[in-house]
Length: 228
Image 1 (cartoon, helix red, strand yellow):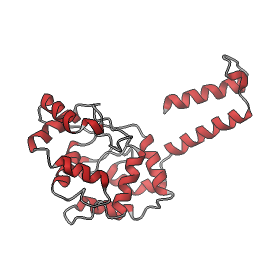
Image 2 (spheres, one colour; image 1 turned 120 degrees about the vertical axis):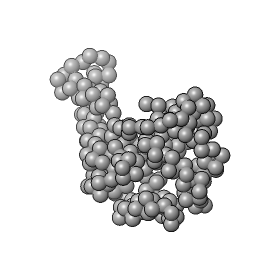
Image 3 (cartoon, one colour; image 1 turned 90 degrees about the horizontal axis):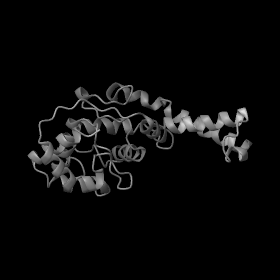
């Protein structure tokens, strides 16, 4: 996003100073200036912390970096569509409704306070625009086995380096707390998450989690922890 802003700023400077460094600048008009200023304002809005994030800071941090001691995942740099979908799931009983999901229940209460026409779009855009912050990882699995298991079970959806895949609706896993990832896999395995008939992607994960042994999971998490 920074390179995008730099490019826009350079174009705007060229227009205002009358520089004509290439054939495109000769055709720039007032309409173009308006478009550029509009784009800059949209970027600024996306980078401005929305008021609704105020209730998230205590657990997820002022930079959305997460907090392992509070069992709160990192949210910075996560896909806007994924954040929106999970907030929707919490608010509508698709996630966090199991009596053993005490942490999910906290998110249910928070999500129901949000306005999905205003707060959620602002939140998801803001969080997606933040630079990703990797949490400190302590894993003891086997990297070679982890790579093999990961590519066989996870890579097709989440990407070869756990970078996520928007087309597959699969979130980024690299940089996320391995304790959070492990807890979610256990939730999927134990029927705490991914059982609601409307949770299409959660049900897919529940199926995959049940085919993964404890040692395989440790190795997979070790592989994910070693990705940028």
